[in-house]
Length: 188
Image 1 (cartoon, rainbow, N blue to C red):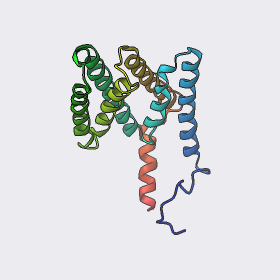
Image 2 (tube, rainbow, N blue to C red; image 1 turned 90 degrees about the horizontal axis):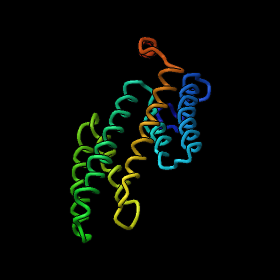
Image 3 (cartoon, rainbow, N blue to C red; image 1 turned 90 degrees about the vertical axis):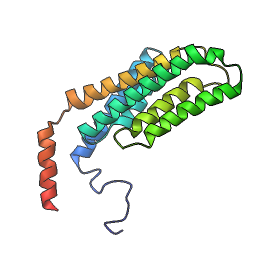
Image 4 (cartoon, rainbow, N blue to C red; image 1 turned 180 degrees about the vertical axis):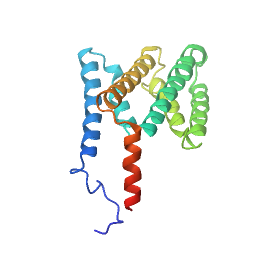
């Protein structure tokens, strides 16, 4: 293969200790979330594992940005729009047409954010996803607010584990990462 052909793994995926540490940190954070929600017998917060997987990025800044967008999108889509619709709108809808209009309105808002700048697009995806998970989980009107509560708690647990593992256990100062990046740029 030539050097510019697409590859599934980086050439040094197994030999570079930074890649191995990153994989171990992500695995530890997700495993701790799994152990917690399994030991509590609370499967509703299983979004903690997904949060660890989706927000584990190679740089601290991009990881933080994705984590903030995930939690704010889930809060707005799950609590404000999802729970708000369950309490204030859905009890007054008696046809599929009314629900379809609500679904279209939330999808338009989520798509508007999702097609905005890369700094905000993940917010729109999370907003729509949180609403869909709450209100499209079954083929009936969702009358329990625990689904939204559990999803938010799961996301917060995942973010806490990411903070604990990536920042507290195996943290790398930003200055060291900048030096490595600068030196590798000079070699090219």
